[in-house]
Length: 139
Length: 382
Image (cartoon, rainbow over all chains, first blue to last red; front, side):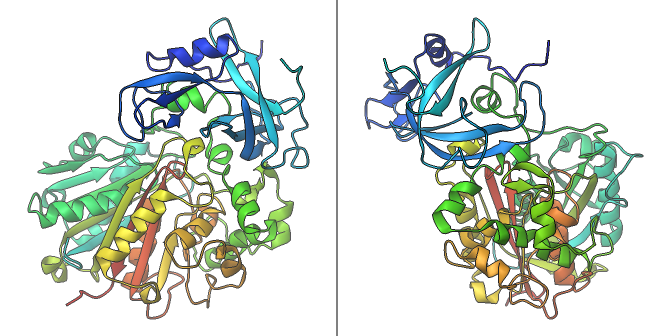
């Protein structure tokens, strides 16, 4: 068995997020006081420090904000592999990988539309990744 | 802090640099400390304040036989030492201590007793939300913003490559530089791809090394054997440990805040600056620093560099030791940038800038995570 990529271990503040991805839901948080939508998860608003926050679903639609293409082998990563930051439709950005497309500068164009896809690492952890929009079967 | 009220009276790098097989990381801290003490003509018992990163200040004090009245273990990555200088200056001014030793040692290549101060546990924010997507390495992460910058401002691959070429020109003048042979833009663009768009010659070295500084009140500075270097202004800030959460990939908030504080406290204008150290773990960093510190308008740093303004003979010499790209880079490079600013202000740098009177030394920590900026001068202001 080849070595695996680094796997997240949820904490009380982030458990809902990883519970969500297991059910193929990408969950963000929103402040009830100032309406700020944010990521990564924490039980208070990073903009106004309000503790009254709710969990909201993301559409899973995003744009490619920036990336590199890693060329060096690493556990769980077969070169070349994209390391990308995507901007979700709701505003927050997150790190991810762009999959289901060639890992080349020609195929990975900034601001291209993306959609979430799921990479099940084990029964506990499913990673959200992204692929060019329109690749999947529409719900 | 009153400008010029604190001076650097001791400065030295580790005895060896590059590959150090006979010392652990702690040992490199101590070696650099002893060299700085010798430079200042001091004994450990003359030191009453210690600061370090990548080592516990308690252990540093114990190893050297120092009984401090003041300790600072601030860890903000590679700019930790800029923050230590700032904190030490404030502490001395406040009377908490009189003579501060700041050390750095890093077994960055040999990894003997290597220690890093960052939380990379799988329960941490980086461990949960970045490491699953990226093998944790500066080359994979620090580099991510540049494609956005290139799209926004039209920076070309050739311009980005020029950063490495010009720094090698500076390194060729420095006998202690790891790489001294001239390179061309073609050499850079044909070197091995590490993380597109970054190639080998656009990434910093990986070496062992260390350095140390000694600070005290400027009133005492004339009693020391070397030419004092005065702290004119300081700044520090931070943004995020997660590069994915940086507000804008074309500009660093930490750079802007820290730089503004340093310039304002020093009471200087950009035209007053004779020499700039712009921490260069990767080739895009001097571009961000030149713009975020306000030396050039947004989007123009690539052209400023390729027009040779930062090169030998240019109007703003930058990274005159050869930088992290060609001189050395043990992981937390800020100490070596500070050492070069001190050498320039003492007038003893291998690639000395003629008549340099004011040096700005700008550091970054993490991946655009934190920043510290120190303005030094070779004369005490009135």
